[in-house]
Image 1 (cartoon, rainbow, N blue to C red):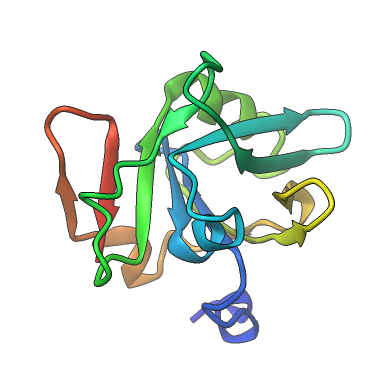
Image 2: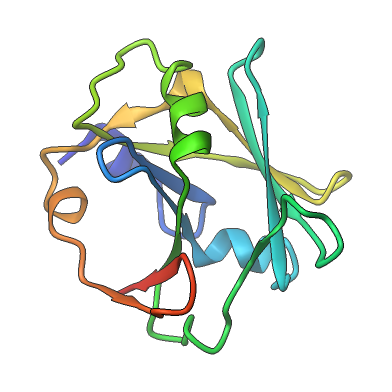
Length: 148
């Protein structure tokens, strides 16, 4: 078990980035902090190695829709697949192992209504069962998946 997992209770905003599958996994607590939005937006600051998630809207072309009908109470997260975004994030990691999954604990910024993740604080979790064996249910009409 990783040290981060033992230090990071699930009530904290947690993000995982799976470099092999080009997948971002947002845990539901992030969405709750952002006010259960219908859309989220991903922002990257490569100079500071910061990744942020904030509430988006339908009119912003880079916003990603949250399919709440799929994300039921027993689901813990939703997944987004984006080769371009994950490749941008991958070059910001000091250890660029294409086979790894990284977990990052973020901080909620109330003033900006966003969750900020410092990529310096990422921890590889590839050997943990949750990173290897994910039981996902996919909505075939979207790129978003929900996970138990």
